[in-house]
Length: 425
Image 1 (cartoon, rainbow, N blue to C red):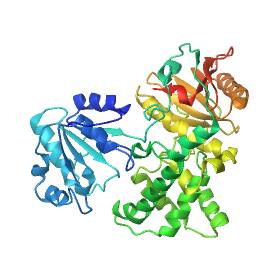
Image 2 (image 1 turned 180 degrees about the vertical axis):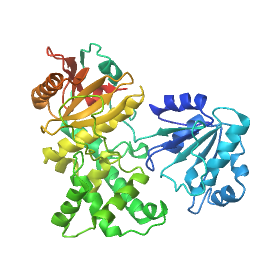
Image 3 (image 1 turned 90 degrees about the vertical axis):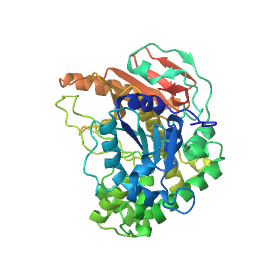
C-alpha cells in the first residue's frame, strides 16, 4: 500500500522477517502506538474493524457472519483490531493451512482478546510482535551514533555526542513516544495523553472484557502506579498508597483484577526479575519493576509540566529511567535479546539487564546526571565481583546510560558511559 510520510520503526525488520516465516502475523500493543500504520506499510490490502460509527463500522458484523469476505484481497492482507471478531483467528489459521503460503495476513490488536470461540492457539501459523511507542531513535530525538548491540558485543566506542539539557529531556518524557504526538508542544502532548487515559477508563476497560469497573478507583490506581513508576512496589503497597494519599480503600483482589485489565490493554510494560542464569548463591528477589507502556502516561496522571519535573529531580530520575528502559526494550528486541531488572536480598540493584541469545548478560545503570556516573559504575563493579565470588555468572558488559553526558566512551575500568540521546539498536 502507498503510505505517505511513514516513520520507519525498528520493528519493521522483524515484521518482514516474520512474514517470511509465518502464514500470518499479529502486531500487538497499546492503542495509538502505530500498529495500524506499521501494518499498512507491509500490507497490500486492508480491512478495518471498528465498533464505533463511521468507516468500517459494519465490518465487525460481516466478519462474524461471513468471515471469508474479510479475508478477500491482495496479500498480505491487513485486518485491523481483529479482536473485535475473534472467530477470524480460526478462519485465518484454516486458510493458512489450506494455502501453505507465508505472509498472508497481518493482524493488529490493542487488547488481549477473550479466547472464547478460538479453538486453536495458532502455534506455527502465527508470529506475534509487540509494538511499543516510539524510541528516541525512531522519533528522531536520538542521533543513533552508538549501537546497543555494539555495546552488548563489547566493541570499543569513543564519540562526542553533543550537549543535552534538562528542559529537552523533560519535554521528551512528557511528550512520550506516541507517533501522533511527535510534533506537539509539551502542554499539547500532556493534554492529548490525558484524553487518552480518560478514553481508556470510560470506554476501553469495559470493552476489553465486558466488566463494569469503578472508574474513580481505577483512576486512583493509575495515579498510584504513576507515583510508583520504575519501582518494585507490591500490590499491597499500591493498596496502602491509595488509602494514604487519597483516603480511599480498594480490595486487594479488586486491585489485582484492575491491573489484569490494564495488562490486557497493553498499558503496563513491567520488567521481570532476572536470576535464572546468574546461578549465584545470593538470593534474588522476584518482584517485577512497574512501568506504564510510556512514561508520558505517568506524567499526565501526575499533571507534570517541564517546570514541575525539573523542580523535582527525584521524580525526574524515575521517569527518565522509564523512558530509557522503554528504549532499551525496543533496541534489544531488534537482536532477539531479553530485558529484565536485578534486585537481591542484599539490597543491591541493577536498573536494567539485557540477556543475549547465547546466555551472556549485560548490566545497565540509568542516571540522569553526569555527577552520578562514578557511583553507578562503582555499584556495577561491586555487584559483578560479588556474583563472581558467589560462583555465579558475572555480566559480560557494564554500562551507565546517562541523560546529560555529552560523550560516549569506555572508562579505564571497562564501564561504558552512553547518553540515551545517542543510542540506537
